[in-house]
Length: 150
Image 1 (tube, rainbow, N blue to C red):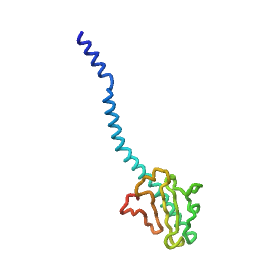
Image 2 (image 1 turned 60 degrees about the vertical axis):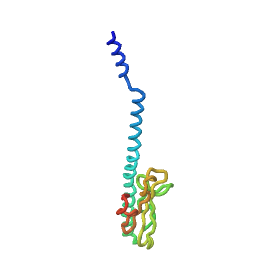
Image 3 (image 1 turned 90 degrees about the vertical axis):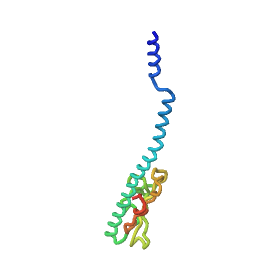
Image 4 (image 1 turned 180 degrees about the horizontal axis):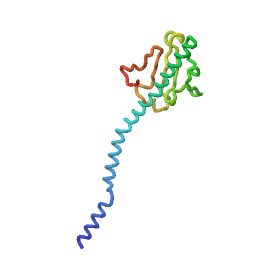
């Protein structure tokens, strides 16, 4: 009879998890999440920079086409095929606002295209890479030699 009661006791003990075991598992998951989530979010931000890079490159290409046809550059976003609405001028995925301004020598000789992270968007937390720029000489800001933004 003694054997039967030991079996029932052992069966009850192995039937589930204790509260301590459950809390240890939750703590391990929380710790892993604290490490993995920020790294994942930084990789997502890095991948979304492609939206700015694409918009800058395409706008530069369209500016050069405009120059070939008209003998000067333009700051008109509609003439450059950019997405324009009541909220501003946007990149394709609306992660960045795009602005075209005259270069140091004026709009007839050069331009600067700037992509700025959209307010309230994920890219706003992309440290050091919230503003990307490309000018008529092909110079990129921040400098690709010292920054990983490009």
